[in-house]
Image (cartoon, rainbow, N blue to C red; front, side, top):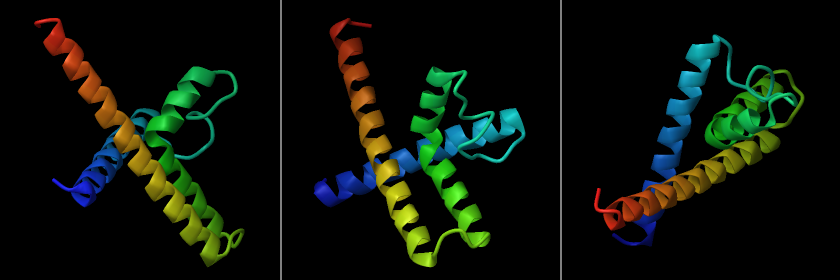
Length: 112
């Protein structure tokens, strides 16, 4: 595979992971995914960090769409938010692939 295929694979991997985690969070809490309670809270910093890292692109996209519908941001700002969410999903995919690769290497070296 070339660099384009690797990049697309990492993006799709990140988008899939983000979607799975975000959907599970919505099902468990019964609320729409957003940068608000119960997902992001100053009382639970570690939980908020993990939730934001894993489902952040969907949280960001939901909040941007809400702001655009209410007229708080322009269409150009909405497009910018979409690009940011796309890059975030790509970075998430790269990080998860790296973690999985390192975990696989550790399992092989431990002869499990």
